[in-house]
Image 1 (cartoon, rainbow, N blue to C red):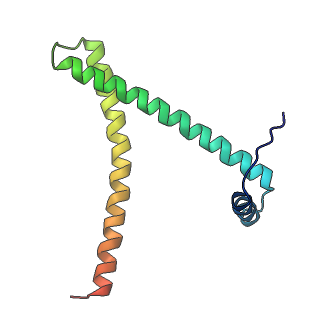
Image 2: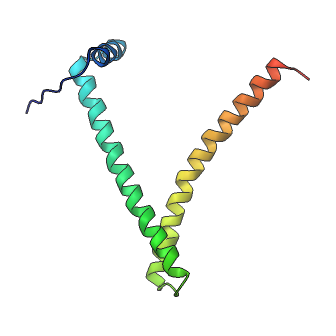
Image 3: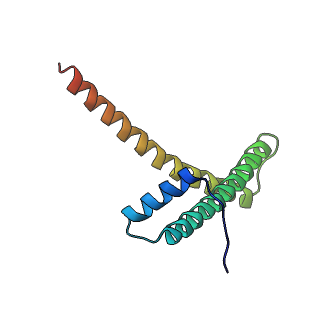
Length: 109
């Protein structure tokens, strides 16, 4: 199946430049980028639905006890969120360390 997408000249130039640097045909890189974008959208939608369910269970737990199944589901959803945040925390700590190193280089003690 073929799909035609109209892009502005600046975006076409950027896409061609990236494709050239990766030694790929422009169309192949465009297809990969679109595929990756769709995957990210799907993941974002899934995470959003999971977070909504997690929040609903937390809200319910404030007014009534959760069943064992609901508590297990909440625990699982919370663990998944914790793992996601751990990765973000690592990135932030790396950035902080880089900034601290840069500050030491600017004004050594």
